[in-house]
Image (tube, rainbow, N blue to C red; front, side, top):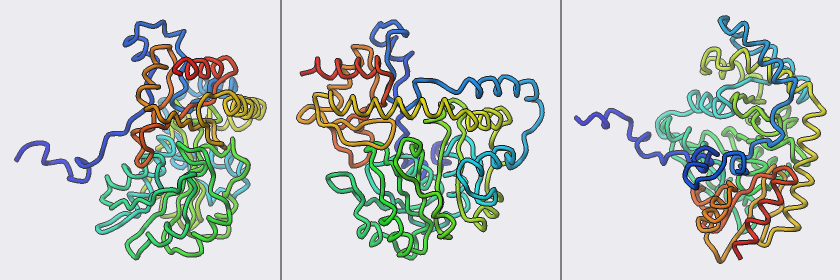
Length: 361
């Protein structure tokens, strides 16, 4: 038997995750100075992390020889105050929200399990579920990228374990209205996972609904608004009964002590969070008004740009040669070949992006 046949067929069938391009690889490929490159392809916070989080991280380094608390209780308590839910409804997760997804899939998926995924959306739902043996069932969003809730409900059957909803959705930036989510929750017996990675930039959230529904899980992250992407820190808001079971399946000590310390400090720095939010609000307005292509309205820290009749690949290559990294969406299932996701940057970065798109025409 060939060695590769030792790997589960489910794993061999997975298309590799496609990350945003790095500054180093673009600098080398196009012979550019790294400092001249604008990286707006991975939805990172261009303001960086909170100074308070950096200080807490440095202080925590002195005790890295000691295991953190198994349930990251100090961070959970801080998150409880932040989201307004009891600690019994909150779990901290690492690496990032992806760790939360993996833990849930480990505890829920068995032979013949299915999951429902509304596309185009974040690809890791499919990867995590498929790796555990689930069959993904895809429901394409409409031409405005809104959910057709009736079609989602119709895709759920007795084998469905989870419905994945990203709100604001990546890469489209739109949210699913609470009334639509309630229709879904009232109509299905499976879990509904709502990914709120970008919720700090949105007008609304659904975390409070966890207190009403015992089949709702809300996932969040410190990677976006809080600028801690490199620490890979996330958390989940879920019914208390589910947390008890989740902690049995979660990797022990899955959140490091430095990440716990930085997360607590980041939550306390309201000025940095507000500055990040204001930068995104102003940047979205600028990009909406000045892009030479169609731009979809967004409640996230990125904008979706449709460059039709041109291809996303050609426009992205043009921008890369000019030292501007954005994210072509061709790797997103059902996104087509003309969509580009642009992270909202600083005023100067946004101007570079607009200039880059304009010079393509």
